[in-house]
Image 1 (spheres, one colour):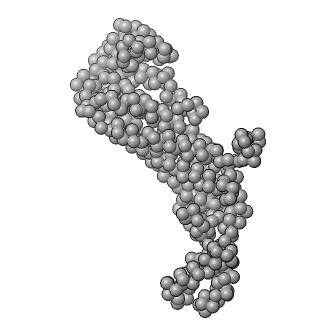
Image 2 (cartoon, one colour; image 1 turned 180 degrees about the vertical axis):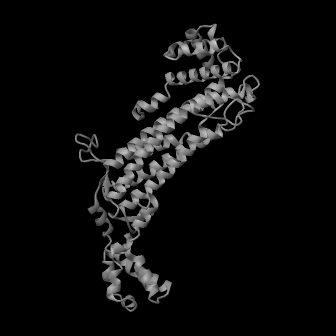
Length: 435
C-alpha cells in the first residue's frame, strides 16, 4: 500500500526484514526439534542460532534469487553465509518451501490482526463515548432518505457501535482461523519429517498445528479471514456514508472537524468538505477488493500449486495496512465529529409535526376507527403539509372526522417527542450492558 494510507507499525509486519526474520525462526526452531529427536546433531542446531542477531541483507537475498529463481532457497543460501556451510547443512531438513512460506504468512496475519483488534477497540471507545454524550439528542430518523420518525443521535452511534462490536468478534474468529502452521513436508504426509517438529515450531510461534495440510495450508482459512476484513470495511463505509449525509449543506446535522489552516477547495474558499469520510468510503472498496481473489485461492491443483501466491503477496499486506489506516482515521473522525443538535431539531420540525403521523394513526384505530379510514384521515392531512406547508397538528384539529374520534388533548399528546425516546435506556442496556 502507498505510504499515504500506511501506518509504520503495520507496515513493519510486512517488511522483507520481518519476513526473513520469521523464516529464520521457523528454520531454527525446526532444527531444535530435529535435534531433540536425534535426527540432526545438537551442535548443528545450536549453530543455526548464531544468526539470531543478524540483520538479513535483503539486497543480497534478492541477488541470490536472481540466479536461483527461488526465494526460499535464496534465503537459505544467505543464512548459510552467516552460519557456515557445515553447520547449516541440516537446515530445512525434511521441509518444503511452503512449510516456511505458509507458516510465516499466517504468523504475519496473526500479528496484523492484533493491531487491527486494537484499532477496533479505539473505534468502539469513540463510538460509545459519543453515544453516551448524545444519548437523548433528538434527530429525525430517515427511511429511503426521507423523514420517518424521531430517533436520537445516541442511538445512531449505538447501532454503529453494535455493528463494529460484531466485526471485532468476527475478527477474533478470523485470527483463530489463520493462527495455524504446517511443517509437514512435501504433499503434507510427514514422510521426511516427524509431526513433533511441526508441534514444536507452532508452539514456539504461538500457532496451532494444521490438522491436515497438503503441501500448503488450506486456503479456506484465508478466504474467511479476508472476507471478515471486507465486512469490517463495509461497516466503516456504513458509518462514513452517514457522516457524509449529515454534512450536506441542506442537512448539516454534523460535520468533520475543520482544523485551523485547513482548506476545503482550491477554487471556493467557503468549502468545508467531508473528505475524510469520503476517503474512508474509497478505502473500504480497496479492502473488499481482496475478498473475491482470496476465495478464488481456495481451489488449488491437487496437493499444491502457486496460483495463490502472487495474490497473497499483494492482498495480505495491502488489506491489513489499508484497514489499519482506515480504522484509525475513522476513530479520529468520530472523536472530533462536530454535532449540531439545533440543526437536528430544526430538520425534524421542518415539516411541522408531520413525523408524528403514525402516532395519530394508531390513536384513531384504538379509538374505534377502521385501519383503512384511519390511514385515509391521517394521509389526507399529511398531504396538506407536503403540498402547502400547513401545520400537521393544526390540520388535524380542524378535521371534524379526526376530532370526532380524538379530543384536542389527545391529539396534542401525540406530538410529545419524549414518547419516541422512552425506550432508549432499554436499547442502550442491550448494546452496552446494564451498567
